[in-house]
Amino acid sequence: MEKLINDFSFGLFFWQTLIFLLLVFLLRKFAWKPILDAVNEREEGIKNALLSAEIAKKDMQKLNSDNEKLLAQARVERDAILKEAREIKDKIVSEAKEEAQVQAGKMIEQAKAAINSEKNAAMADLKNQVSNLSIEIAEKVLRNELADKASQTKLVEKMLGDVKLN
Amino acid sequence: MHQISEIKFRQIIVMVFSKKSFLYSIVALIAFLPSVLLANSPEPASGHEEAVTKENQDPKAEIKKQINEVKNHHVLDSHSFNFFADEETGKHYGFPLPIILWDNGLHIFSSSKFHEGKSVAEDGGNYYVLHHERIYKTDAAGTLTEHDGHPTNAKPLDFSITKGVFSMLIIALLMFLLFRGLGKSYSKNGGVAAGAGRFFEPIVLFVRDEIAIPNIGERHYKKYMSHLLTVFFFIWFLNVIGMLPFGINVTGNISVTFGLAVLTFIITTFTAKKDYWLHIFWMPGVPVPMKIILAPIELMGAIIKPFSLMIRLYANMFAGHIVIMSLIGMMFIFKSWIGSPLAFGLSFVISLIEILVTLLQAYIFTMLTALYFGAAVEEHHHDDAHH
Image (tube, rainbow over all chains, first blue to last red):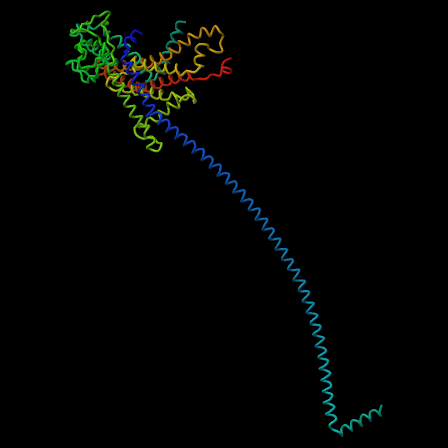
């Protein structure tokens, strides 16, 4: 202890305290404050960056799941639309078939009616022509027959002769 | 019975030696050699005249005396900056430093006036003499009246820029330039440290994250940061220049550690919150008689804490310097092909340890300072803490 007190030098203590305090105040202003501020700022920056990255990741995940949901929904909708379309198609086809059948039936009826009337007309025409022709033939035959008076007479006689035979 | 104990003893010996590694044996050697050396060396004050008379008969004693002088000179503060001295010609290589005295007025002159303590310096009609790095007022002839080996002459107030003050100024300048550079580099370099200071950025962060925040707490640590950082680097850098071969020993000087410890004490006392004083004068959670007994103990503790800081740093650095100087001195005492290399090896190993100690002591000082600051601002929750 005596050695410690002996070794103690007030001048050195004085200068040490002065230099040290001056150093503390100078460094506080020019060094520690800017250093710690910069480091803090950097750390805050890193923290914020990590945080925003995390948020972005979550957003991305959310977006992904949304997308999947949308896709699934779209798939369901597509299936529904396809189904509906198929139904509509079937309906249209069957309706068309029915209509076609009805139409065809009608046409056949019409055709039959037309054929009948045509046939009747043709038959009537044919009858007329046959009668005309018969008449003409008869006229020609008659004229021909009648041109030869002798034979006519002969014929008449013969007919008459036949009548007598009856 | 006797045999059994002997066997046991042998077992213990074998056990100790088989487990002893090389490092342990070195540590043991280191621990014992200086004490042996110190025991052999004569006391500088009492053996002074004897050594002079023996000079011609015993060259070994002369060497020991020289080593002792160098050692004592090395660890103490000095009024001039000497790198080395040639004992034979008495020539000192270095530079003088300003002497500033307050003796009924300011006296400023160069330390070269003392001629390394060999002559009387005159300034403004007063005569001063340098004796064992103390300045005494004297007459023109330089007579010193001694009592118990200590001069009783009047001592003027000595504000000289000594070797220690000069070293501190250099370190202060270095620290200022280094850390101002680091502080400036952030804004210039987009928030990233640049320059030589960037090597110290992790250490600044270490002081903040490992010393300040755990000991003081997230809430209060900021106002102590400037002091803690400055104390840490100041002690560390001064310790490191103590390892350079210029014979600087600033942190191993009681005046310097006293100054640092006083600042710790003052800051602790003046920033202390109500709880700190409550825990000193009226310890909560103990019976009243205990409170009365505890109060003086706690009060003493408040002073002993910085006192231990002062002694720890001083003793560690002082002892480190003494050990290294002693081991270096042993090289010259042995003067043999076996002893001197051994002493060299030892001093080398100790130097390596001392390099670690430079950082360790700075860390411990800062750590404990932070701990005391932490105690000053700690807020107790008496309801759950004390039952």
